[in-house]
Length: 272
Length: 111
Image (cartoon, rainbow over all chains, first blue to last red; front, side, top):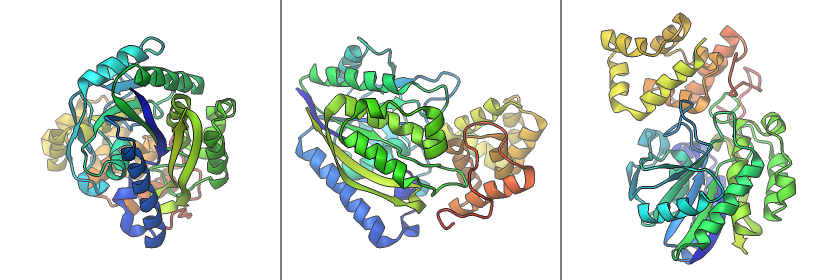
């Protein structure tokens, strides 16, 4: 049928792995909004959700690093991390190889995407699913944009990828939800973990909400690295979602929780 | 310097319960495992000793290093402190994109 839902959210592993170290009221308010995003997504009755995550060397490494990859299997498993460390039990997650293949064929008309018939989900996908589909009862199509090992795909290609995904979603009879995960500013897994550039995050989310594509594409990786850390490279997933949805955004939550290492974000975008 | 090889070991270990088990058991099995990665002496020693601080300074991507810390049984707060200690002991991060921008006595998230 088409794209029926679009949104973006954080995926930091501390969100589920270190909840006891966060201020309970602050943490619980974020959780509430994250679950609310999931309720809004499920209310659109999607047949599958495409999760565009910036994964972290769970499946892709510098020996053969695709700029873009889409999963094409009937089932996946995750988390690849120690379940106790992440606070999420290991399980099988349903996929839909046939739907993936049809989407991939259409995306390939304009973007040379890799496909993968094996995919171990890491926190980039598992943390969002924990809140968005807590019953793990919705087919998931994993997507990766390399935001870890430079050279990274240019931002304007992330937009092109979003446009290709939209065209692909519109070409299939199924109802598709699309969620980008990652960002915004953060310095993950370093001694700087917990550092957040709140003003930078706020400015980026304003641009995202108004779908000001020129403005979102104006960031250079050098400036992002300096002002928003290596985690800031993950704005690619947000840009892809905005390019696919073409609508306006609504921020449900975007406040720093340092022990979770990010401005904890949940936002939706109208599909237009 | 073969940062790629160090990180390849972490990538493989993260994906394989057998490699994790082999590393934990130590001994000649672990030596043989590590010898297959083409590491420098400094890198080999850092992996065998579980020297998180040295591995951070060598430029290991934190997204890989944090799972090696997990394999070593190092809790999150100790992992962060080990990286700070590495910078105090061995100097600034030498390669990669996971440099340190805060001071070694700064605890941004309070841990």
